[in-house]
Length: 255
Image (cartoon, rainbow, N blue to C red; front, top):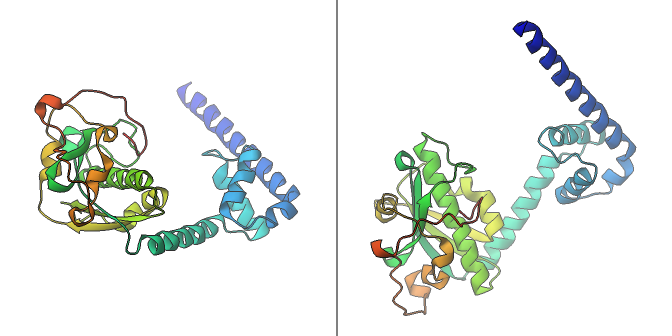
């Protein structure tokens, strides 16, 4: 009986997938002229969204049908757009401001920390269960997620300064953290990422501290590298008596 139920479930799943392929294929064929007139991946995604194809199961089929029927390579169009956007960010960041951060994750205690110049903590706490990068039991992913949060934070500094782009130098302990792996986050934040692998454990030490600190509590200008920071305030971050146990933080990049 159990085997029969499994066979029935598999059959229904296969039937549903087949129906999706047919639905997407017919839509792409019918909309061929309209789709050929779209020149960017963003426009194609919007078309898919309007036709309810922008889902985990339907969108891969949509991309396949585009390529098969119309010779439109969605992923290549997206890559071209990303390269062009990054070139714009690099050009705008030349001779611009520099943010300097230290980032670390600690898989053993499921936590992360991002520190600014002079060792003050800008943001730390436990990883959310739905963290998109960190995988339990994988130290490399913990460090990469922490670095991603540093990129997000640099983007918030850019917004605060109201500049088109800037550069963020992120100090990490893990040589597996590479700027290429942070490209998507960098594009979203509007920053150029430099990775510096060193032995400064300031951020790692904060991973073991109790409590948490939201990035929203940090004066963002204090994250500028010392030689470009014109603020002489005495923000020393947060000591033990100032730690809190709040969970009112943004998801995705903004834990």
